[in-house]
Length: 363
Image 1: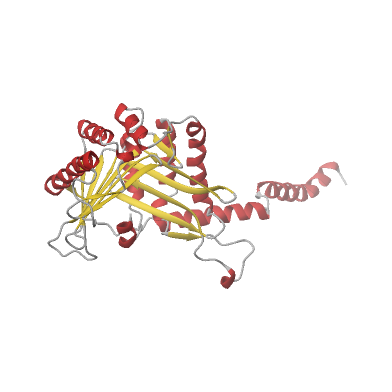
Image 2: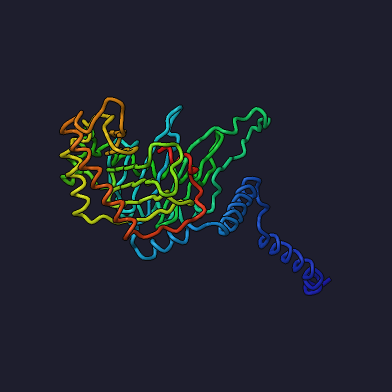
């Protein structure tokens, strides 16, 4: 048989072999179990993010702030395990001011704050349910689980929208765990070098001097008639001031109405100076007032809670100068309450996923 004849006969076989080799090389390798598990996890996460869109009011607000470059209205509060029987609490505001375990003030850079806000947006945190329970790898019988055990909590806010997620059980959902650890990890080193105070009056001095940010100071003023259930015409309100933001809650009607006031820099300084002059940290815990009255002042982890009413055996003169100092501070709060009623912006009433009305009343 001639050479050309042999080549002609072998050519089809060679072509078939080449085609088989090419097909084998083009075919993707069989995925490993680890690859399949990762792909399934990614697909599940994508599907869950899509499902979160329906009731997510927070993400659009965070996205709007990120696109505008102004994150002043953003904040996040994380309470998460960082060791055996150890919870760490970090609160961070959009301007970079933060508190570590309420005891230390620290600051993060704008880029670090933006990174946290971007993660809140990308994971669609606002679409997570109020309570999350991660399935355990070694499944216990349902009756053996402690279904009420709180693992950790994350609260985030943007503008008028606040969203809270409580992690239940003894294992964290991966995305929530990653967010919590990112916030705590970024805060840890700055907090180690942060500002601390020796007492409430020391804290008020530092706030008045500008060493501590306004966000580290909170004031709560409460006024109602001294009976369990005030009537519609009775005085019944709570004024909460956190930094320069004042929120007045009018409970003379149901549902209650919240109004917001932004204090000017001068107004905030006047309040800080008034509290400092009153030596709020040294005020008696019980003072006189014509109606049920509460004043709570806090800077970082130092707080004074004063209850005032017509106590038996007490008169407006019993505590002399301290009573007058208290009256002066509360008069400022009353005027701010009245101004909020007249000029405050009514906050939208969302179906808030946060503490119940009873829990808010106990604050």
